Amino acid sequence: MSTFLEDFLQLTTNLDKIMNNLLNKTIIKSSAILLLGSGLFFGGCSSTSSTSTDNSTTTTSSTTLSLSAAVTTLAGTAGSSGSADGTGTAATFNQPYDGTVDNGNLYVTEFGNHLIRKIVISSGVVTTFAGTGSRGSADGTGTAASFNAPGGITSDGTNLFVADVGNHLIRKIVISSGVVTTIAGTGSTGSSDGTGTAASFNLPFGITNDGTNLFVVDAQNHLIRKIVISSGVVTTFAGTGSRGSADGTGTAASFNFPQGITNDGTNLFVADVGNHLIRKIVISSGVVTTIAGTGSAGNADGTGTAASFNAPGITNDGTNLFVADRRNNTIRKVVISTGVVTTFAGTGSAGSADGTGTAASFNYPQSITHDGTSLFVMDLSNHTIRKID
Image 1: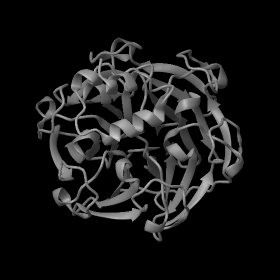
Image 2: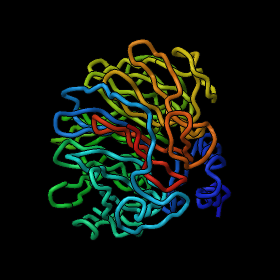
Image 3: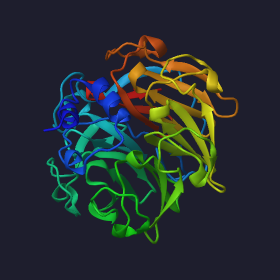
Image 4: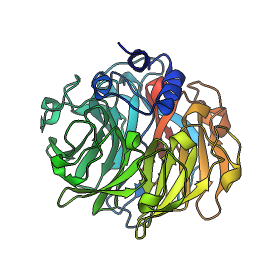
């Protein structure tokens, strides 16, 4: 067993080591990925739609969130991993990775359990929506289908779309029936454009949609890919395919292990983890710019490139970006129009305390989404779902 794989399998106890190793590797063997057993990094993105709100929904209207920064625990038991359904803190999760909201329900991907869970936001009732709970790539209905470390998730109001990281696939789940199908990816690592299962990905961590297209952060390829939902045609939208931080248009721009993505209907916003940057891509032109981050790990508030992050996840409400700053254990806010970055919630130290603003604590907040009223944080190492009002 390789040192990298040993690190991968120790993820639950040494996330920092995994992050550093992965960002310093130029090649990840697909055989190692097939043994993914627990979560790493983040997906996390969000936008507002007339039908649903999440890290990838169609953005036909935006609702600026009015928040007091009061943090509570919606579901899960802090410090306890498991797969029990139940209500609120009686339910258990194993490294919740990403979430999306549709019609009053929060759908959560679980890296550790290989499941898609559903939480009724109004009641906190948690059920298992899809997945056997064991690694696999089988299509099927509900708990007859299987995933391998599902990561990013988005909704178009009718379907959920899941970045099935360990399988290098993009999966579709019909919300009304739970039917799971594979819409893109060969199941092996690669970077080929093509239609449906003729295209290939290498660690597709994050996903968002604008109602017509899916946009996927293809992390190990350092690319942003586009999938036409109606046809399954996959193309490379931005990125050279090599590590870098260059701004530019389309394939002239470069990224370093991008993992989180969200959109506001006009722009994509990418959490460029290896560069510790927040990037913006104009959907109509493919122009890529850097809107926040120094390019080095840090936790400084400031404006634009004077601010710093450490492994960010991302969502937006049309006015602000909300960033799950994972290794800083904080939630940051970025005003889109000005680039001003502030710390919105979190002490900066690992913990599970509820509270308001910087009195609350998180433990590797992996990703973040919203329903137009509240933020929801997948608090990975606490195995909980947090709510911010």
